[in-house]
Amino acid sequence: MPHIVLDNSLNFFDFSVLFSPIFQKSPLIRIQNMYIESKGTSALCSVVVIDDSHHEFFIQLLSGKDRTTIRLLPVTDPLKTDSVKKSLALLCLQIQKHYPKMNVVKSNLWDYLEKDIIK
Image (cartoon, rainbow, N blue to C red; front, top):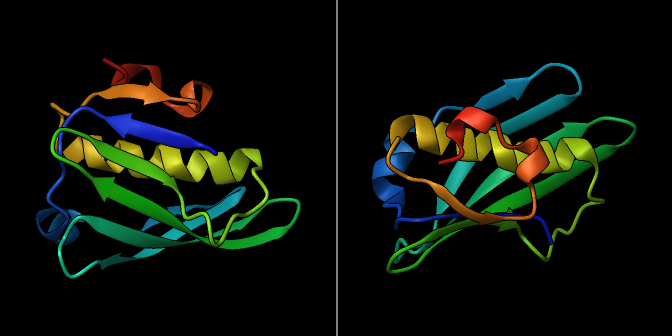
C-alpha cells in the first residue's frame, strides 16, 4: 500500500485552516476537501484522478504521538497508477510547505517525492 511517513505529529485542526485544494491539469489530480475525525487523530482528503481511467478515492492522514502517516484509505483502494501515487506526494508537499521541519522518514513512494523536500 503506498504511504509516506513524516517525523512529527500534525494537528489536523490547524492544518485544515492552511489547507488549500490541490489541482494538477495533466494528468488530472484534484484534492478538494479535507474531513477531520472528531478526536482530531485522523483526516480524509477527497481525491479525483483522471489518467488512463477515472479514480475517486480518499487519502487518509493519521497522526500519532511522534509521526504522521499519509496513505490511501483501504476501503476506497483505487488502482495504484502513477497519478494516484503522485496525489499522495502532492499532499505531502503541501504539508511540508506549511510545516518545513516535518521530514519524510519512511515511504515506498520515493520516486514521486521531490528531492528538495526529502531531508
